[in-house]
Amino acid sequence: MSFKGGYIGKVLEIDMGSGRVQTWDLPVEMAEMYLGGKGLGARLLYDRLPAGVDPLSSENMLVFATGPMTGSRVPSSGRFEVCTKSPATGFWLDSNAGGSWGPELKYAGYDALVVTGAADKPQVLLIEDDHVELLEAGELWGLDTLATHKRLKEQYSPEHKVTCIGPAGERKANTAGILTEYRSLGRGGCGAVMGSKGLKAIVVRGTGSIEVDDPKLYDLKIREAINELNNNPDTGGGRREFGTNMVLSAMDITGLHPVHNFQKTEFEGTDTVNEFNIARYWKRHRACFGCPIRCSKIAEVDEGPYKGSYTEGPEYEATWAFGAQCGNSVVEAIIEAERLCDEYGLDSISTGNTIGFLMECNQRGLLSQEEMGGLKLEFGNHEAMIQAVHMMGKGEGPGQLWTQGTKALSRQIKGSEDFAINVKGLELPAYDPRGSTGMALAYATSDRGGCHLRSWPIGDELLAAEGRLDPRSWDQKPALVKAQQDWFCLVNCSGLCLFATFALTLTQLTPLFKALTGMDALGDANKLLAIGERVNNLVRLFNLREGLTKADDDLPARFKNEPVPDGPNRGRTVDVAPAVQDYYITRGWDSAGVPTNAILSELGLKGDG
Image (cartoon, rainbow, N blue to C red):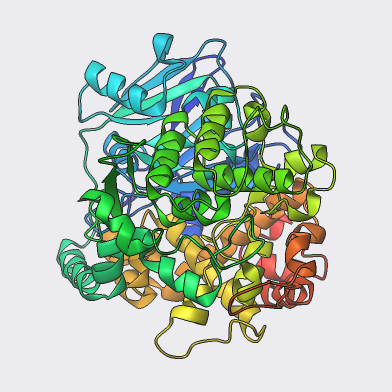
């Protein structure tokens, strides 16, 4: 049985230790069961990665996986996933990015790239269709990510697509990400895993194409999808105009925007740090492969101490991480901080979160001047914040320790554990869960730790035009979070951007899957959703094998014990434990959070339990 469309049908595998290059056929049955992207990565890691492997050892794997829609004419289909075991959490990690690298990998003839082993000397992987070669990185090792992109494009061509790490990844920092054509695979330390393998960059150029099974239906459904995206008030309106910062004022007004390391929710800097003022710094819009939304923006500072600083963004999460989280109301400093994270190869959410944590440690008198690297780490001190990013990026002084994240730091700073804001070792993004029971449950049950991209109940609780759910009630939340997690997981297996699904429903996407691939299994909406549920259960088994328990499905003590002191959620705390038990029941798991034989059998995973 062979593929009719959407897939190339080949996986490229590289052993960095031996230099061995091989390709193998992607089984059609695996595509039907797991689709691609996160699903393919989950199947490969679960099958091939022994339990208890050190994430930074040569035994760990990196899987770069596309989906059937990646690189196709389906709008917003430039996404791919990197899957591995996280050095930050010790559990599952997948990180998703757009841009153009994923499509180029498919055009070169591969649905996925599997990287194993570790090189003795830093290497660059060159993929030009069926020509695959490991080359010594030479002077590239030590360069920042932007300089690496520039050097490699000068050496090869502007059409060659680059994925690389910066100095933080080279030093195997827990907060290190991977930059790919100026988009970021940011969370959980995937850049550290790439650095541990001695892999500085992957350069790809492909001249192939993607087949379509039913071109007539495919063209019709693509036109419909583009119309939906252009006419939707989110994807064709606010997100196109303001990017991800379109929700900034809404989060301020509803009391979900965390301030000073989640100590409060009213930020004194909202007059300057808002979507309207940030838009003044944008020079142009930028889109990922095949995307009409154009949510990405290029910002540049024209005057002041940060003159000349530029970044792709600032995105909403970075705006918060280097804004309200650190008490900073200087937009130019936010732009500079995000630029530095991109160059050093640092995850901006974890970096800003960690600096805010250090500022509270200083506020409470828990750090000496030496432990702060001589910096005056106080909320609102944007100069110290920028210097802290430099120290983390370069590994200077205590900066290398800081890049291990808040969980590791809280073990060393006595009295700080209750306000080290992470779940499973991954720092939380920009939503205070005391104002959203749905978000609280989504955080607690996220497979990769503190994350807003496994489920985003805030849309149903606070932003929905009708049928809005009470953000202070637990009613319907376990079912909502479970349903969103399965839907979001399916999207992350497909190669489609999650933002596109704010306009496109499963009813609209199902015929596209069928027209593209010709697979009957992908032309059934219920079977498609079952893929998302299947992958989530397989990842749960992976995490349980790595030692996860129900105690890990919880929130930091601050949210349970400290009422919100201000704003519309004043006086609120949140204890997620009872809802987690209801969530387990909804998932078909037992009271310890272990998938039952019944649900595994239903999903075709009976032999994996």
